[in-house]
Length: 372
Image (cartoon, rainbow, N blue to C red; front, top):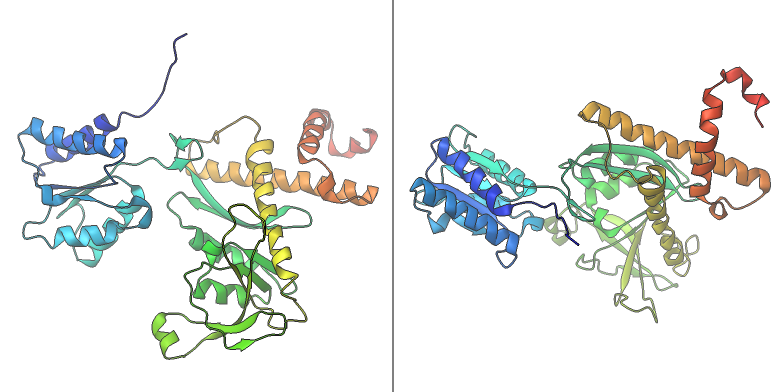
């Protein structure tokens, strides 16, 4: 039985991109690509060289640079290339993110794009199934663990950073709440912004962050300080007092040697070190909520149907409102039945709502009481 495959011709993509720059008059063209151990990056390099050969232009090997595309090395690589005795006239960049770093480097070097140097990016955003053929949106949201309601949501384009969106979300926190966050979100500025809302914080830390013990507490946790920079830390200036909780997960396959949590709850009696790690586990509730939003509510549709940015925003927030409505109905039903909302199926609630929508839409709002 024949098998059909729809994919990307990496060789052809690189060839067309380089040919375009050659047609625009560029001759010294640089290439920033990923590790050529991977076949697709070798194909990009071959396409780059093939376009040069067809045009009769010699490739300067000094202008071909391998970078780690996920580590934002485009900035340093661009700086190095532009400091060559004969810098490139144009750059072909394998990653959209690396191309943004490339543009920042050129801007800091006072190089005008495209008047002095041309930049062409080749990329497709990654997805759970490989690479996506469609533009993507990125969003950051808070979730209320008890009701699974998403709130304070902000969305942006794929090139909008998670931290950038998180800064817009944090004002939705209020005093009396406890905010749990993953280790990739911690930063001095973001921590202080979240702390200023009055909410208590319990965030996981990366293992490379140095937090010397200043005072050991009876429950085994300790007080330390976080600083805006290593320079501030060396001078012990403008530090913020925090409490650090270290713990292990015994008997769990693949567990890390030590986990560290950072909290604004400095009183060990108000938040014992034995309780907070167990509470932090509730952070994974947001993964369940994202599954509800992206899988069950949208059904089998893989992509948003809208074709313009404004309509994408409208469709996205429409999904958020629909999720809020279904969650609200579940919470209300659980309250009336004196049940835990987590025990009610979200998918079943979606199916009930879908069955009822057609009937409710066929009559004026004033007649809804007549429908059982």
